[in-house]
Image (cartoon, rainbow, N blue to C red; front, side, top):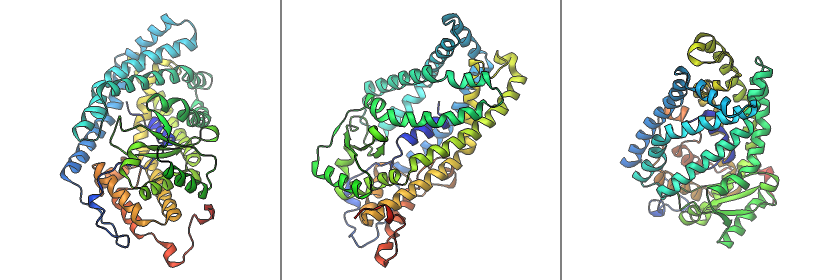
Length: 424
């Protein structure tokens, strides 16, 4: 089940370039002083784009239909009753209910998750992952979700119980320290459950990345190379964490498929997110969207409970059996406000692109990096308006290539927007 808030949190943890690459043959012919053209999407890319839109629509409906079935069949109330028999204390009832509920959701979602995350990716040549690895990672994610839910889900339901009229406000405030905690622990304890992190093998490139980080004002960072080629043909890099968990992460595919200058631009983009404080701004922005979403969900939930409490099997939102109702409404209102979230995300990504261009002043390698992303990612560089509004949390690649070609204020002696952040 695809939840807007979960998707936002994942973006927060790993705000990345969505980088995926292809051989250099189509970009090598362009000289350093020529604009890099935006390639036309291949038939395979257009097929991937079209089928992706269909899957997105299916996920959207699925994320509301399944919780609705749990509610209107009274099955959620039955799970609550099972939990009450297994756990006498209120805290345990919450945790047991969630464990049973998420296990059912995992089983129900499994065929669709398999097609989306494994079968389709292999059919389009985007994955190296074995079925065993995919399933093991899926089970690990389930276990992590169960543990997190068991440890923390009682908090919003306690607030629901103590303050049924203002719980949505208090939960939105508490979401901020929770996101900060998650940001801190994810690179240390969660991500290593799924992939191997180690020191960079290319020490010369590592030295250049650290020099670039120092020039960007990022001190005390460590560079990690993660073995993602075991899973995917995608390429990615990100700067994550803070204080003791701060790190620069490169997928091994990135180092293999991009040349060194392209890697440095990718890293400059990610450093831009860090230096410009996008993580903290996004935490604040998500907390506002959470506030709005939960407020609307609360108002709607009360009306629905009053009307359908006989079918639902509960008459209070503080009843743990209401969880599918809360998720359904979060998904519904999340869909409505997704264009706002995506617009803000695109804005920060554009800022990071601008930061990367200003600190590297390497328009050619920035543009060729984006071309490679388009080719291997089977991307449509000029998607339609609905795609931009509801699916594009990054600027479309055609626009990013154009911007990389055109943005050169240093050549005209103009001041740099982010020059104040750069150290000599």
